Length: 256
Image (cartoon, rainbow, N blue to C red; front, top):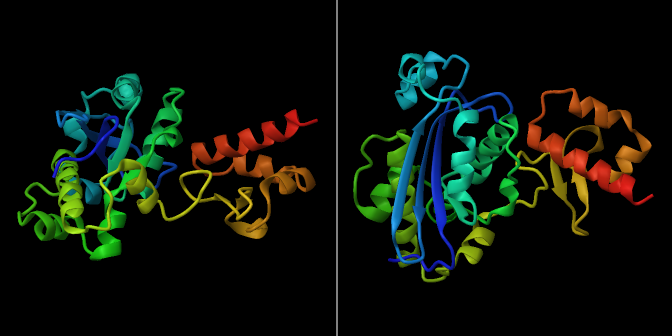
């Protein structure tokens, strides 16, 4: 089934040094841009993470320190990646919880001003887990009746994700072939940041979603306990969370 697109969508997948959004880095990124006319463009980059890859992680994705020692750093390719995804929607597998937040972190570390929140996001894993509750390999076998070769290779996983979504649209008639619908369907939480430390309440106010102020409106906490802002900025929170918090603080200041 051909995706009905009003603008391109870029499916992407990351291989990384680990699963900590705040501290781990990208070692491979694959992107598959699908245009409204069905044309596909695939780009894959190996990335020097400027830190060692733990051996147990290398055993999963097959990328070792020696493989990427001469590869460009993310900062060196960041603008090229932003140029490729600008004006596009983004799709992935478990992307809303991991790939998108980590991409946002890497862009901030590279000093590239591109807010990933501006993209509509489609997480194919959410559709799959809602309908079938399986892994990507099982999803590929279930929907496409093919075995996923080179699993945990970023490019193989990216192409498989794209093919699974097309098969999901054919199988589930209550899914609309529309990126806006799919983005809303696969976005299960309403967070102001990617990591879920700051959420929205039913009044569309930002609230803390953790710690001693969980459920409290962020603006109110920053006013009554200004030291909390400094504590977060100096702690091991994702850069994007800190950016959102800073924007809230600055927005509050401009009201006076």
